[in-house]
Image 1 (tube, protein in one colour):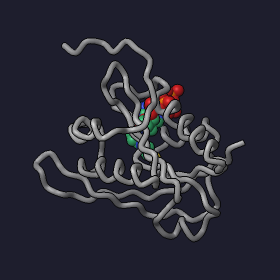
Image 2: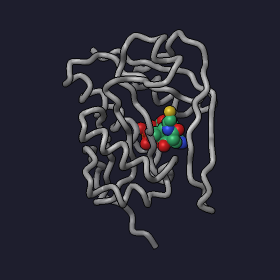
Image 3: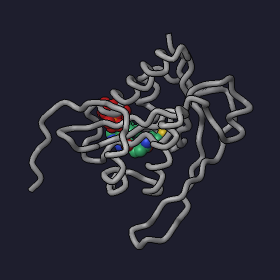
Image 4: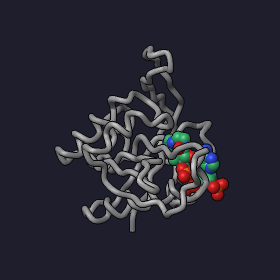
Amino acid sequence: MVPPRTHDPRIRLATNVDLSALMAAPWSSGLPEKHRDRFERQVRGETAYLLAEVDGAIIGHLLLKWDGPSDEPVRSLLPPCVEIEDFVVELELRSRGIGAMLLAHAAKMTRERGLTRLGLAVGIGNTRARSLYERSGFTAADIPEFDVRWQYRAPDGSLRWEGERCIYMVKVLV
Ligand SMILES: CC(C)(COP(=O)(O)OP(=O)(O)OC[C@H]1O[C@@H](n2cnc3c(N)ncnc32)[C@H](O)[C@@H]1OP(=O)(O)O)[C@@H](O)C(=O)NCCC(=O)NCCS
């Protein structure tokens, strides 16, 4: 039996030592090799790859992209903002405030860089994530819904595509 995790989560930046644990994390969606790409972008100063850790185990992540959304139509339609991507917490540890901690840390780092707008895409059916964002001060941007697609590796090793219709939400930091 897995022993219960006892300590408070801590939020920190990813290091190269974390990559193998991240690639093996079954709760992290998308392609395992994406973790290395996110970390290398952090080394180049383009991102901050935030991890939530409890008792030495990584149980969540969030990518902050300083240059904001790269995909259209969002990039052209919105004023510049820092973008949150790849925001996930391990299924068994959700609803304990860990996601809110990751969001708060992302907002703090954004403010520390003198930037005042944070944005993210959320699936129109993802009502629970959306309610977390609303509670955290995000509001829906006045742009049309758009499609987001991503690749993931299925348990049989094959590459598959997934997609969802999204809205964009923005938080103005004070
Ligand atoms: C969204 C997510 C990262 C939030 O992490 P979390 O640690 O559960 O967040 P918190 O505990 O701080 O807040 C949870 C709140 O968010 C909402 N929520 C979002 N997804 C939820 C889920 N799957 N289960 C429970 N609550 C969820 C609820 O409003 C919940 O409030 P409650 O706990 O008071 O009922 C996490 O649910 C997750 O990994 N979801 C799957 C991936 C995803 O949808 N990512 C966001 C893409 S835009």
